[in-house]
Amino acid sequence: MLEQLINWFPEWARPFIMPMLTIAIVLQVNLGVCSYLILLERKLSAWMQDRIGPNRVGPWGLLQPVADMLKLLLKEDVIPGHVNKFLYVLAPGISVFTTMLAFAVVPFGPVPRNLSATDGQFPFIIAPGVDLGLVFIFAVTSLAVYGIILGGWASNNKYSALGAMRASAQVVSYEIPLGMSVVGLALLTGSMSIEKILLHQADAGILGWNIWFQPLACVIFFAAAMAEAQRLPFDLSECEQELVGGWHTEYSAMKWGLFFLGEYTHVITISFLTSILFFGGWHFPWIAEPESQYLGSTLVKVLVLLMKSFAFIIVIQMLRWTIPRFRFDQLMGLAWKVLIPLATLNVICVMIVKQFHLNQWWLLPMSAALFLGAGLIGTQSSRPFARRTVEPVAEAHGHHAHAH
Amino acid sequence: MPINPKDIEWVEEPSMNFWESTYLPAVFDGLRTTGQHVADFHPVTEFYPEQKPDLPSHYRGVHRLNRDDKGRVKCVACMMCATACPAHCIDIVAQDAPKDDPHWADRDKFPKSFVIDELKCIYCGMCEEACPVDSIELTNIFDLTGMSRQEMMFDKEKLLSVFDQTKDSAHNPVRTHKGKLGHASDFTNLHTLGPATTVRADDRSAKANSAGVIE
Image 1: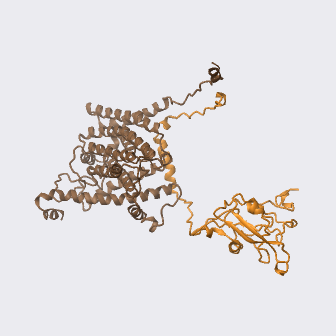
Image 2 (image 1 turned 90 degrees about the horizontal axis):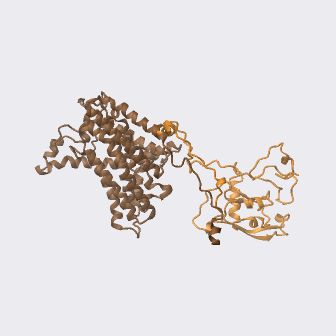
């Protein structure tokens, strides 16, 4: 059916049809999913806090996202007089554009192995065959911080500027463990392509999922990716208690909405990446094996991947309402003193295993040893405020100076 | 003046044990707590407009002017409430009771006009405390609204209508009954229930003539 559709177009246009179709589907689904994730998050936070949450618009508040969207679209779009108008308008666009662009290389279903753009197979990925997929994602998502920095700076507001500066320091720091944590995966798989990392795990079965060999990398990746997405407990750039709204203080209506669309798209991307890189993607024993060809197997694979990603989204949302926000020095300390050394050591472990052709299962105790070793060092490290002393007050010192 | 070092007491951070310094157990512990709230869900939310809150009986809402047993305004226009009011929101114009009218035969004074600015009022309950005849009381009504400031100036008729509206509700009984007409001197048969506190029957103050007064 899809092949007929493609053949209906002129020759030169045929390679563009499937990508266009995929982009359209991803974009629309993403918009809908984002708005309902916000509802889910509000409901989940309400349940955790023994509240009920939105329940007025539609049954169980199910139409609340529609009402919110309409409100954001119809609200007066205020552009304050004191802002740099060009950058102020540009910033939300950058924020959404970069996070959406990152999703281009994330497969959201079983990508066909011999895919060509014109044979009518649905690709389940916007940009198939990007061999530098991981690098592409980290390159593009780190550009998202430009949206925050530009928005904060263009707002000409001290809260915005503070938020933007915090965001830039945070993203620059957490880029490193984020990238380092997946270097091990690339070494194990022999490829930076996200599709290939997925297929490598799917072919190896459930005991070939990367979580068994790189559990520490998974934790580091998850924490650093949450910091990249500015989610609590890493949302120092927009913490309401200190900075009013942080970098989006001056934003309203749909520009503000675009920032949040970007943030939620980022969360979706993180969840997809975690489930693809560490938890086998669409692979699940018995029901979604690479060789399963039964009717609807493709749908099952898509659903497996979606359920895995959904589980991580739930975890991210639960973490948001569970863990209090870090202090800024703790945030930087976590990145530079904990995550980066651990990620580096983890890469070294993988190198050792690959170099000396050891059994891959050695990586599991190695990761555990690194983790427990970090905890041991944590108990031994001296805390800066542990031994406080006060300078004795110099009595009548001012008196003397006066007399002379 | 600098702080004397002797007065400073340093509070040390408790040292972290092994599992605490790996952070992850604490994270899972927190997730378990929040997850338990989701799994064992007992919301405390009240569906406000449909479900009215169960307010305590000493809640201080909109004022009312009580009526006496003949349906007249109980207020004797003594100005005690207006004097006690810290927000100066009570405005009373007193009038002599018409002597030739048998309806007012046992009264000396009554308020010709009695206006409370409900927007100025801070709902402290001082007027209720000050009133010698228990004429002014605060009800449980809290959701008063108006389209203009003028509308929120409650006059005598309005305040009396609040009484008619609330006198039979379980939450807003006429809390004290100091005499039928509200004479300030009637201290002989007082109930021991004060506005906000109840007194046990065997308490000394319960045997006193006046509530809360121990002789």
